[in-house]
Amino acid sequence: MYEFQCSILRQKWKLSLEDHIHHAMAINSILLLSPNKYPDNLSPHFCEASLRTTMNKIKSIYGLNLPRMQIKTVTNMITIIQELDIEAISRSQAIVKLLQLDLLPHERKFANGLAELVKKLPRVPIEEDVNESELITRFVDPFLCGLFDDPEEGVFIRWTNDITVEARKNETLWTRRPDLTVTSLKGVKWSTSHGYGEVKPVCHEANNFLLSNDLIRVAIFCKNAFDAQNLEGILGLQIIGRSITFYLLVLPSNGLYVMYELGTLQLPNNLCDLCKLLMDIPLGLLVLDVFHRLCIRSANPFQPSRHRPTVPESNFDGIFSTSQDRKRSCHLKKYN
Figure 1: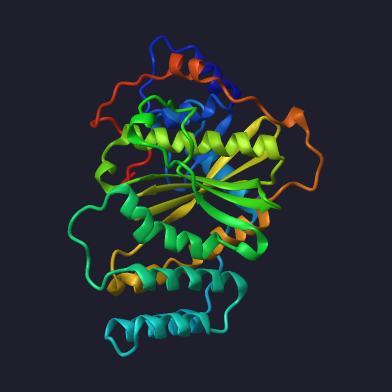
Figure 2 (figure 1 turned 180 degrees about the horizontal axis):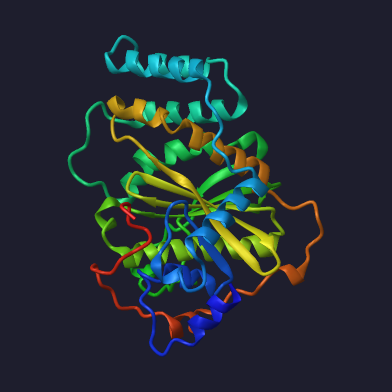
């Protein structure tokens, strides 16, 4: 990792962001790991075998294997959704049935997310692309609130970047607030941050520059909160349209942060497609397990020597170009 960082500083020209997302992470000592994605520009420092071995080690240390689902649980949920689809039961009846299922705690949280979508989704697909605000209120917020919101325990999903478009123009990559946070409430004040996320509507799906910027912002927010709050880990979310990619940021070794991609979940845009979401229950349960088990304050005392400072924005701008080109390859493209 150190050799990789040194090679970045030796570059004679500024690097394009879209095809150097790993470099942008590495200058802040973050190694981005995505299963089955091995960019060519990492090969001088990380071969495919070493990346695969590192991923397996991270999965082993932090217990990141997908859980097995009970067939009965999935079958019961599918039956309820199918009954709703053919209008054998109403939305209210479907919600009651989902919430009355005999489920384990994390399964119940996933069922809560399903129930919230049952309230909001139309019966048929919406033809036009939804804007960011509608995307949040109609699809993303109901599901994520079902997963993470727990008012009795003081945990809340918060949409924090609610300033005007004009004000956003004067903000920078480092200063703009995140679109969402998952935060604990202590008394009357917000306390521990457990996760951060960025949202883009589907119309920006092909804008790799904006999406790369978003992922870097998520990583920086997570790293800064991780360092300041002495956490075991912290959750990162990148939302593009109705697609949610979950990341876990941890510090397995001195000076080496790892941002591990847990997986991508696709939200449906109508009631008929809710059954497809049930195929992603194992990923949802893994995310919930990670959130409750790792995205917490560490029981060990803070050790400054293990952490590394975040690079100032001026230094970042001196290394990476602001030019955009849709033809550049990008680690975030779905077909990679």
